[in-house]
Amino acid sequence: KWGSIGAGDGQINHPMGVAINNSGDVYVSDTFNFRIQVFGAQAPIQMISGLITTVLEMNLARGITNSLDSKLQNVIDSLNAENANNRADAINKLQAFINASQAQSGNHLTVAQANQLIAEANRIIASIQ
Image (cartoon, rainbow, N blue to C red):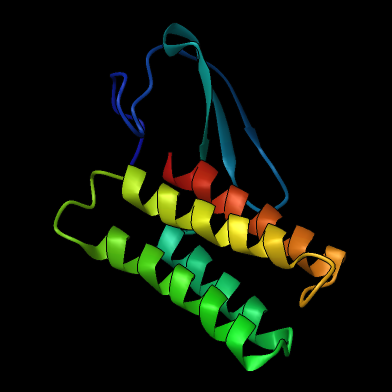
């Protein structure tokens, strides 16, 4: 849920503009909080599941696939935990996924594959924040 008045996650204080991209993400100009908030069309867990599918479809070496998959499973575990309102842990775990993707770029991942995974992980981070 999002859109109540305030300064917390998903809260808005005096929205002045709204835009929607081709993926269905909603961008809101949150004037008095001095930020642009992005609300994803999909829930973060659905987006992570899609990213896991992307990793699996890349037909990478088993060790790389397992490593990336486990990092994403850790993100899902963080979002499902009792303290799911503390999204910093999930974001940190997504950052670990990004770091692993960057480390493998040009090695076990092509640069294009790494860039695709990193872009999707950053989109998930934006939806969690």
